[in-house]
Image (cartoon, rainbow over all chains, first blue to last red; front, side, top):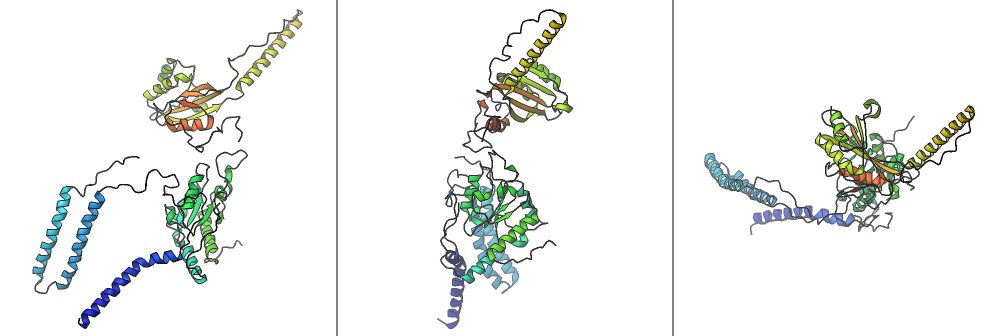
Length: 133
Length: 165
Length: 191
């Protein structure tokens, strides 16, 4: 490959490794430096936390599916934003109005997804009554 | 009673200990453990006039897994004692305990012959590092207790001790 | 004021004793004593008139019957002595010594008293309902069907006095540890 592409690839690799180190580093540091046991009076260190009481039921409970749908909507628009970054680089190469109209059409098509979700009731969260175990 | 031999960390050396002690002392995260009237003074200490955030101890965590110091503020009744012990167990090392107020030190005004309801002092349940007397102690006294704990952790005191003339 | 209406309703119950104490001295406007099985009826009357429950507590009357008996004996002895003095002064022979006074009460076991305090939201009208049960079998019907707020008050009274509230849905210790089998506010409680 040519020199410039290799250099760019090196930059990307360095950033990737840096990010990985940033994310994984604290785990490793904590594993190395943390005390490995804690003083006990009742041997209840591993018990689920319920403010000092005996826990009722399991910690892995079902939660409402609305959270999942909300996260899905966010994800779609996060990817959308990712596509808008290159637009900032090529804006106004020919003339601005063309780019503006194109971006409006792009965002408009994506916002139809929001309208669809709105009509399907993703944004109305009903109060749920929780079943007692 | 909580005095077991602890396994040391994997990596440990003196300079690192000093650095870590500095970090831990200046960001002690207390657990919101107000049991009785001393809790009101603890809340006042966390509020704006007697700011505890100046010393890094502002974030009172509700979960024992995230806190360093348990400030036992108030009377421990016999009914509450198992809950207090469970929360002490669930705190990870390094952990410290501050007994705030006369009730947490030795039962306070509720000690009499034939008392049936309270545990006479937090020391009966687990080891305590700093005792703050008072009924209730003033917020300044709680801040002094936090500074004493910082001195216990690092070995030196960052703010001068106020001498009574 | 509701005092007169409540008084009439309680008298129709029937109540064992109704008193109208002075509010400034005693702190309540009406003091009603009922038998244990009339408690729920009395409380229902108050509920119909819009009263709310303030507190339930107990009183341990240990030693009351013995003290009353001693008082009665002393009074009888004093009366006999006075009669003998009068007869001697009049010159007649003294009357025969009176027979030992009969038992003033049917049993020798003291009472536990349960005291219910009520008040009204709109007008100030404090009503107290009292009932007495023997100490060896203290059972009172629960009023938590009428006043759900009395649930915890009755649990506390059970904790500290040992009074069983018949029909209570959850009579477990409220303030004492769950496995407590002692009742601290009884007068013969030793730790």
